[in-house]
Length: 534
Image (cartoon, rainbow, N blue to C red; front, side, top):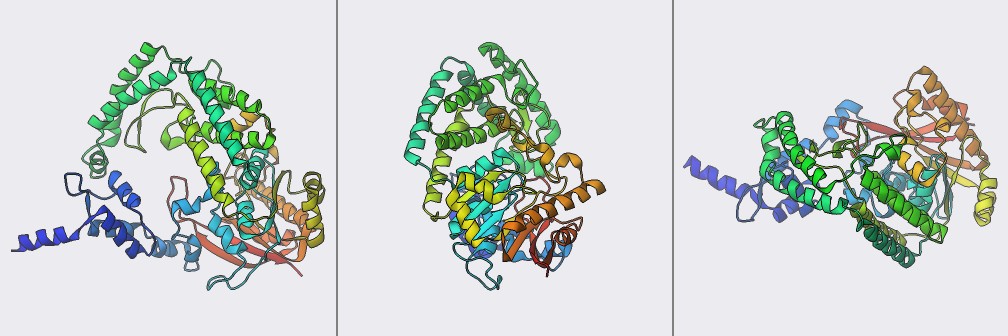
């Protein structure tokens, strides 16, 4: 009888994928899609029950999984009860955190648009008691990065100016906020794709890669079935390192035979530059071909957008493992066991797949932004925020915008300064600087990675950020509001505020849940609210 009751209870606990998404949405008080549940099953996070294509999951297993990833209580224990969980924006799906043009190009260290919206929004709510900006105000971001502040200012009906030491960062920001001739852009993309396909017909890398993919599919289906393989690894039934290494060596024989059969050239002859080192020979040929073709196209704005698509494509085609895209340890020139995907993977031998994918995605994102954008002004200029003459620089580019700044001044700042000794902002896009011939200004970065986080580096950082604020104050209105997003583990910002003639009037500690790094430990950042010290 007990056994019968257990069977009935187990059957009652089973949910279809659709039922699971509905239950999870109600349990978490946010939308959980069928795709979200399917992902958990596919990657072995929860077990699949049922047969004949009728996938079922256990509600109790689903609940255990979501309880485990619900971090609020745990994080407050580690980071303090003053953690503002409302600013975690946990209720937003990944697609909302990367909406429209925010995912036009990867960029390390950017904040999510919802954080900008919260402080720039022209309305108040139960959590934010005060409105800091009004429609038509001008906002400044002196560390513009990839332009998140500028994009959200536009969406909210605010004008915005960005400054960045990096030419490439300025390019990303200005492409995101520009008004585009989308039908013409689509035609240029279509023409470039056709030319690339014609170029490839003279090569053997496409046929080689198709044959390699077929071999990989058969091999992985046999030795790394999904999701059974991942589950057995987690349960300790398979030693992943030993098994993965064994199968990697086994498949390498197949790989080398194909390379010999197609006489494919893998490595480039030189190893001097980033493009020489981190791309296989067939990929480099296609990069150079598309670069030359884009340079021949009339219309600067069209070329800029095409270069962003190409840059995004190139980044995804570096010769590295899937797990090391952000770190780039050593170039990969052969097939390998991929810990991220739990199977044998390969480097790329052509860029055309990513080029097509990102071309379509870019057009869709630009169209999505067109539907929400306002008729306001945004621009990012390249320069040193510590000493740039902002009005003079803007006047050369857009006199109308310069007049607006002169008349009403800049209402405030929303920015995320570089974190001391954490990111090499130029090196993360080294390929782009080489392709486009941009000047690098690594030595002008504030708090660069190569200077570390020692006492001297911290003192230099304090002075650098304070100098930026002092210079920017020349263009701010008297009642300005400055918001700076930082992880201030060295307690530098009270000194920065003092040197800049400002005071910290409030600070908001927010948990950062959606980090791209492998470290998923409890982590927070602070949004400092600064005003003039009187």
